[in-house]
Image (cartoon, rainbow, N blue to C red; front, side, top):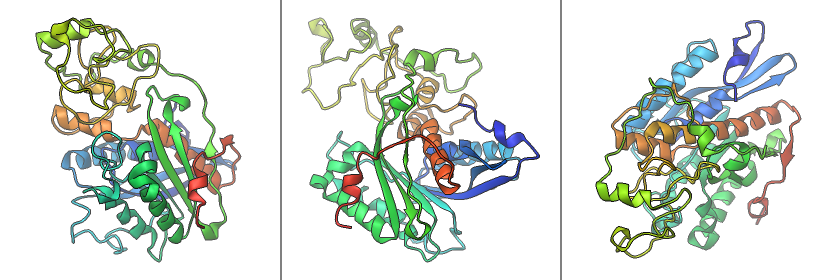
Length: 381
């Protein structure tokens, strides 16, 4: 994908949607929104950020530096994004205060997925993070409602609390005054070099009479090999993880696409622990397919492993699989950066969705498919 080149034409008038973000992370969603553009009757529509929030200091530094740098360069205007780095439950954060959080045309919130993931205890709304989506609902219920929003979470959201959590969240979004499009995206079908499945809810304010349609997949497969080739020698975040001799020996017995559970390992290299839900323990990437899902945390055996060399991937390689460009700089230590990368939405995936939003707003035709989870979103209306 090309990013920003259309905005360099001085004779073209820009139509910009102002965006705010909750739980912004390092800026995967933010960068995708900044990348987005649509041609509208001799001019271009795009997105520009006003503010964002997150509780992680490294993520906030990463976000502010990179998103501001990109928008200043490619929108050719001074961009100063207010990034509020604090726990969103703090009394200092007041989402209903339009001076602290001014009106935006669009809200993006990838509310934390910890309690909805199938990996872990899956507590759903009963967990520590399960109720954080309510802050997005609070903003959507302001008198000066945004025109549209994007909410993103793991596919396990739909089954959490026996499906009750998902229905509750969707009902609250509808009651806030939005018409919903609910779809489970398989990003590998959109040219992302990673098998990453996420539920994305797009809402348009009902009074606007606009219906978002899911952009059609390209079905162009980008492999892990294609994604990782050509990393320049000067690229940052290429520090390697120290591997013990036993791990190196174990990896040499695991073929591309295999993991510790299905590889034929000598007895002394097998794991003497109960088998877990995680199929990617010491799993080596298949170079001829999109990689398996990049994750943000986990101990031994969860770092993602190269198909040819007996080692874990570097953070830059993980960032490539997530479609972060090589110029993107992450703040913090190596494990903090790994977490930021794994928790982010792929920027090029978000770009596709944001461009469809721009085309919806300006009535620009595009190829689309039926939303595959709208039967849930239309329930009890």
